[in-house]
Length: 447
Ligand SMILES: *Cc1c(COP(=O)(O)O)cnc(C)c1O
Image (cartoon, rainbow, N blue to C red; front, side, top):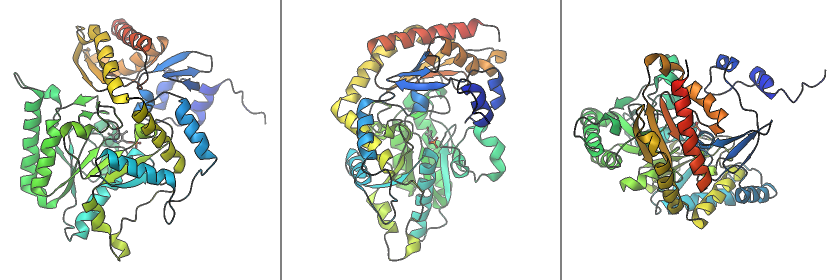
């Protein structure tokens, strides 16, 4: 049999590739971009059209596609060691990455457990927390707490602490549910309330729950500063500091899911830094490998590690994944950390963000846009839509954006930008102008 024509990538993909987070039938109308190559902030399709990757390819790509410095580091690693198992063996990229991440937490979170994706990191943190209490003779502490509208991944365990109906409802019978506490989303402010007031109010619901059930609760998990997948819901840093205080008071672990907000996304390397506290477990993934390779990491404190350290095998944390600590992925992460160190990235990002915010002013003040908000290099607003337009808004916006050389995928009615950290002045101007044009075009078209 002759191999099918390489030309028809879209038809072949729709037949053989089951795409993630997609109702495949929508692709009868919705375009699929056949990405041929990437360079800097741009993706290029097979016909040579370019698209500004304004959402960093699902929030993972920090320093652009085919970044020469990350590429060089990976090529050298490839010729040295592509992979070795991390049980009974160790290697330099894993050691160095664990040490450097520990240093970034002032050695508070000095133990790195490796996995490959974000949902696994979340499950590892949940299991570690439960197992910690079990090793301390407190196996009744087996409940978890998550925040309303939180997203922590889509495996069955991670869905237990996720509160997004679209991803969760179909699997409800399979899921062990967590307690859901009020969201500190600053958009919940009542008349005259500040974001800090909303945070204080949300913390009261945590206190009430802890008061009643802390003896049964192992941990609370939070996305510090920004609940990304639910539509870039932002909250005051005092919420995270308040959670830390309540966890200390009631003997509950704090898990910071920094999978999306870590690696500089909110303006500090870790979002938790802005709250001035460290969690007991910190989950990292997405941007930590520069968007190159699947990698996730759970950092934890000495006290956690010590609870597992014993002659008894079963008191150890026996969790594993085949590619745990993959040297190539660790090397990509080290090259990413090198870029942070050498290029003054956080300070440069602050300037770029101010610049992009300024350029987005017409959208911030647009009569059909609400709640324009920004945190680090995350920018979002909510479209004001008639009910009939809301259903299809995201898909129609996506399609219109492509025609303007932008890769953007609104979450429901929330339009957001989460660009890589390397945009130049021209790209910032182009992104702001065309986002606005796309918004106007989507609002005015028939739906
Ligand atoms: C993306 C994400 C996850 C899940 O990571 P995957 O690699 O997609 O499994 C978990 N938590 C948060 C906050 C995320 O943004």
